[in-house]
Image 1 (cartoon, each protein chain N blue to C red):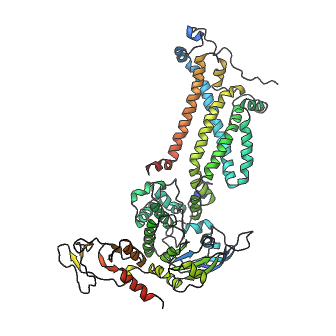
Image 2: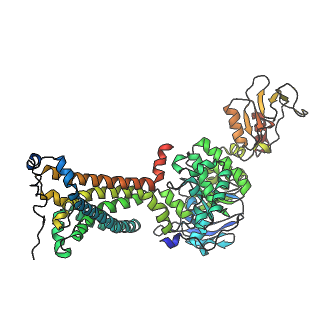
Image 3: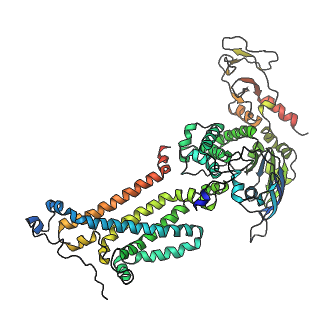
Length: 370
Length: 239
């Protein structure tokens, strides 16, 4: 048994670039079952994009995902990673070079956070020092303090565990990540935060990702492309989110994306992408801060020395909205705090503009198909 | 060929004429006698330790691979559980009798019988521990490219340790008690002085007390080892 524990001879690889993934009529049939679980699935995922497999339970989305790293064997057809059939590769080696995140996360309870993250690097025979520095790097990347490294999974919150799960999957910088409902077990508030964090991370990393969910909202939010699947492992439509919402291929897809398609499209746009209002910016000492040419908000917004919003006028509480938020989140935030205007801030917290419900309505009205 | 059981050196423990104070003559609990005669119990005690350690070690050596095998090939569970279950129900003295023609008088007979008694407990606990490994840890491990062997040694067995160690503790404590009957097979142990002078309270107290001390000590050693080997089970309280 110990021979399997020794390091792989191939040694460490340099950080890999994302690779394209292609399903070629990939089919999964279980013996004794007449209908295939995945039926001749064909789709291409360009390198560096998130492909979301979405559909009702029993549609074969998880099966399709698990065929990629051969956790489930391919009956017919093929799956190509970087142009190379996954069927030609050694099973264990293939899996070590594909990030794997599941809903229950599956951290090893008996291993510390650092050891969990080091799982695949150790399998690949990385040196101790290389592993240690990679663990530090990853903890930093996912925004966790390094003192967490020596703790055990049971000592972490659900959200922290989820982040560690992602870090563990990223450990050897794989060209492809498989994520099966990665945020499914997280409460809605934290799920939203983790989704945003992950999208920010993906903007840096540009991995090819296959992301499975049953939640169409999550699919729309996370996906560069969405594959809607229906029972029997059929692909109903494969399109970018905006196209899916604007032109559902059939009644099944139309029903599945839901009646609130217009609202969902708001989730596709970020606050930074719409022309924002500008308010007169005033410093706390009363002097004007910055150019005040075209202000269209009738209230003064008081900012501190770093340009961060402090209050409206003399005593109005400010509702802050991150410029990376979606219009849907922004609208929801405005409705929730029952305010007319929200101050849009950048990553440093400085004001970049002002958003209102009217402005969001304007965006919807402009884009609504006649 | 006759089998003579319980060949106790008659008179060895009874020979207390020299110190025939009132207490000893009355079969009482005599601290002076205990202090003077404690060295007589060293050899039976060491024999007892050897019987227990050897039997539990052999039991683990047999039950552990069987459980690992049955974990992968589930059809093995029923036959192994049945056979070890039957072994467990044979009265120990009967087992010594049955083994005498094969293994003869001595430690071997006792160890074979005592080993047989540990199998059911150890097999069950190893298997239970492996079955309790969270599915998601197994799935994540496979998904990250651990081979079956790596999964077993690096994930499944470490996570089964608390259950395995719990089985070891039960098996050890039980065996300390059963080994007190090993003198029937001519294997010595603390049962021998106990049987030799059952009427003398000082003797019964020391021999019986040493059994209890041994059981407790072994239990604490295994518990300590478990604590050291499973630090993650303690960390939960800190969360």
